[in-house]
Image (tube, rainbow, N blue to C red):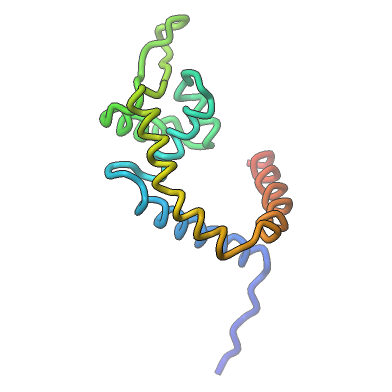
Length: 148
């Protein structure tokens, strides 16, 4: 039998992050209201956090995605009447995206729907474990953002 080659810690770390991301998205999406994906929820959360209309380009930059990927998510949300996409009054060539009142309510309800998932995490791991993991993960995120 050939022994398994030893994995490099950096490779293992990114494999773990990818697996965690997939598992977390699946868990969250099962708790979300019908028709809302994790990407759509992230967009609603961003718009709610901003509290003001945003441009698709600004959203693409915030999520580090292409304008096409953002446009696809925004069109789905607009079809559900959760966001409104309108011309920028200052520059008619640009678009602005804002939560509709229904979108703001939907976003709040979706957050409530995901609370049991977060509560289960808090029961499985204590705050100190989360706090211990954060500094490295934050430095890694910043480094990746600064070195595209």
